[in-house]
Length: 138
Image (cartoon, one colour):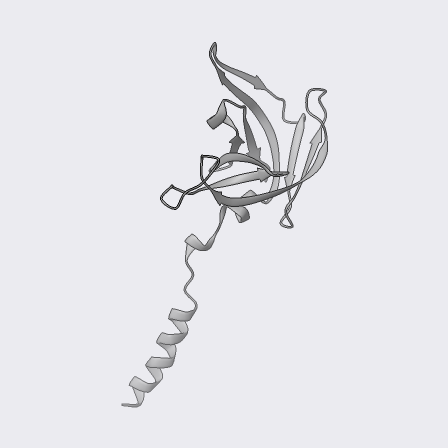
């Protein structure tokens, strides 16, 4: 009988300390230092890729919603901006039945994005814009 009363608090302790890996959000995954690998543009003439050297452009996502871009090339400006990850729909006016997706907003501009292993891709390809591909720095 005494053993049963000792087992119950132990079981409650174990269950309360279990974690769920689904609690990790894309916002947590995006925070850190990234380097620009390439920019992909899909158009009528096909796909073009502009490749960048590892030391050319760095993206620093901070947990406070600030993005710092440090560029050592002429075609991309160094700048600091706000970012957020928010649920939104693909169309301009969402309705109640429309599928919601996570988007990366950079200074209010909506970008689709995805993270696969150590690669972050984002852009406006859903409206024929460029896609930026970044590699995570360890």
